[in-house]
Structure formats: structure tokens, C-alpha cells
Length: 276
Image (cartoon, rainbow, N blue to C red; front, side):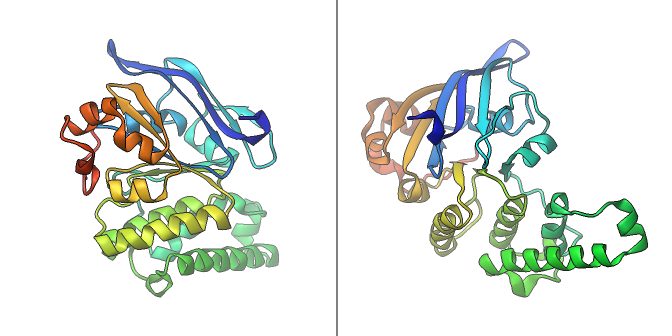
């Protein structure tokens, strides 16, 4: 694809833990606005790839190039998670990481903090500029909560939300960072079929509304096959297939590695915990 259409380019990414090569020579490119799925069996290295892209792990080898919303190129393989968030990469986690004792609204307000235009002294003396800024942040947070249909829970402690709504809140909080690239680590985990169906529509909606590129890991194959435009398949830290969902469904290497040779119909309803 032309470079002007690329948002993320990963080249020969590898990482070694104590002599064990967890991911080996992983490469991929994502175009602007693409919805790409990363799948594979338990322990294949999917979350490890996410952790390298989001700055939690530093790769042993390889490069990660990211183009921000303005088209500026950033080499991000050695940036901290905070720097990456400011650059335009945000993520959710397989294990929910909300501020449980804070309200739903405050969880989103914290994520909007980086957009503040005023300094510490404005906050200390609560200047008019600070109050106006705070009002705008609350309005933005409420708008995001409304998109996810949890605005009526704004004053509840996050830990008291049902599991599916906690998942929604975590995605909402990631969007508050105003990313160009959104990484979703098993967004449908813990959701019932109705909630998963609503999530599929929501992911498409936020991709279009916020002009995002989305890379997701997911074990719910109904969701993956239903929304991803292209899939990459990992096994033992190596890419074994990539292509359109229907191509991946029929790929013999994927059926053997990911499904144990039981056939493509096993995709439906597969929900395992990712161990890597």
C-alpha cells in the first residue's frame, strides 16, 4: 500500500524472555481507517505483540513506525506508554484496569487530562480559565459516556458496574485520549451475545466517527469474522497466515494450529484466555 495510506508499519519485531523467543520476526502494515484482527491459539504471542506496540515491552529486535493524525512519522518501539498515548496510540487491556473507587465520569475525566490547556497554578487558584477548561472536559466525558449508553451511570463507582459495562467504560476511556490507532485487547470478554452484538456495531461506529484505525485481539470468532476487514494469525510467536476473514477460515495451517484440525466451524463461539 502507498506510504501515505499507512498508519502503522511493523518490521521484523521480536522479543526474547530469558532465552525464550516469544515473538519472532512479526511484520505487518495497517492502512488508515482499517479494522485489523490479530488471532491465534492460547499462548501464541498476541498480547505480547500488543505490549510491544503500546510500550509496555521493549522489543529485542525490529521497528515500529507510526504515522500520527497529521502525517508525522514516529519510530515508537522504545517510547514509554505515556509518550505513545500523546503520540496517538491508545489501548485497552484483557484484564480491566479501571479506577474502581472513582466514579464512571471521573475515570473518563482522568483520561481527558492530557488535553488540558491550563497549568498547575490555574488549578491551584481555580482561575476562570481553569473552570472553563474543566467544564469542557466534563462535557466531553459525558458525550463519550452517552455514545456508550452508560451516561446514566456517571456517578456510580466504576467497580460497581456490570462486567460488560466496565468493558465499555475502558474503551470509552481509551477514546478520551484522542488516538489515531486504538488497540483493543479482547473487548468482548465477559459480554453476553446481545452485548457482543451491540459492541460490534459500536466498534464500527467509533471507527468511523473518530476516524480511527483499530487493531484488536479477540477470541469471540463471531465478532472477529463479523467486523474485521483483514486478519493476521499467530502461532508460537510467528505469523502463519494473513488475509480476508473467509480466506483465514479455510486456511489449512490455521485450522491445524488454531483449531486443532477440527474444522472451520469450530470458530463459532471459541472463547479462550490469551496466555501471552
